[in-house]
Structures are given as structure tokens and as C-alpha cells.
Length: 228
Image (cartoon, rainbow, N blue to C red; front, side, top):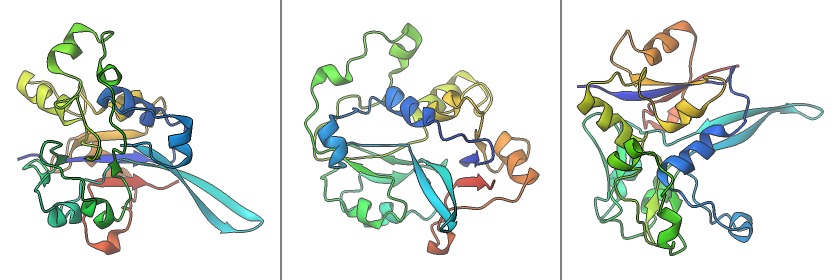
């Protein structure tokens, strides 16, 4: 059994946020209005946060891409009363919008702040993509393209891409990667099987010292970072 994971090289990351834009385009995440942005009511499945280091005036800023950590011991799975969020056998934590009741327990339990609540009823046209090429339209941009307000949304490592690649016998991590990794111009994001020593993520982890965010929480996240 595979265990999908991600490695982000902060030494290569330029903070361009192409990963965030690609995630929105791939998963039909609405952009929202300027007013919704100001009130922080716009969903983000993949975001880039700024972390300051040092003391004034010697202050430096680190830009850290943050998808869902897909924890091995995910607290969001434990607290969901509707079992709308669950962990697959391959380690991907997914969200079933049809079961979600919008109680926000998972948002409160997540120590990374990578879950978004859909405040607004989105119109059908916002999820309709007539410009998609046939191969993407056939497999579907997202298994549940129509989302209603009152549900929690999150990154899923683009599991629809991963599942399609496995069915077609393609190499996940080489031929097929999540949208954020594909769009990164600096090639700072690696994806693959953490249990395969020959995968790109395993080779990246072996090349340099790595760290995970908030390891003291005991969640065992599957997103690793290579420091600057």
C-alpha cells in the first residue's frame, strides 16, 4: 500500500503563489469578491503564509506554502460527528461534501488552519468550465463540482488525478502530480510515495534535513519542508 506525501523545498520557493492559483483552477474553488477577501470569507485550499524571523531591525520573512497536511493522526477526522472527513488507505484525508453538516469542528481541531468554510451559495456558472480540454472534462475536474454553502472544503492532494493515474498505469510523482506541484515554476514541490525509497519525495528527504510544521501536536503530517 502506498502512502502519498509531499515535500516542499523552501530554498527554491519564490512565493509566487502559482500553487494557490493552480489549486483554485483545478478544484473549482471560487475566488470571491473583494469584500469577501477583506472579511476572510474566501475559501483557500492551498495558501502561502508569511512567517517572520528575528527581531527588528534584523527581520527576515519566510514564505511557506501550506496545503492540507494529510496527517496520519488527523484530529479533524476524530472530531467530525458526521464522518464527512475521513482518511483513505493511501493516507489522503478527504472531505465528503454530501455528508458535511458545517459544524466547523474540524476547522477548530485543525492546528494548521488549512480548512475553509463555504459561506456563500455559489451559482452553477461558477463551477461550469466549458473551456476544459476533453481529457479533463472526461475524468472530471472534481468528483463533486457543485458545492453548496455551509460545507467545509480542503485540499485533497488532487486525488482525482492520482486515482486516474493509478487506473491508467501512469507513474504518480513523475507523470502525474497534484496541480500545485505541476504549476510551480521553481519545481519546489515534490509528490510521491513516502514508503518508496526511489520516489522523488524520498530522495528529496534523504538529500537534506527536513522538518514538519507543529510536530509537537503529534499529528504526523505528511507534508515535509526542506529549510532555506
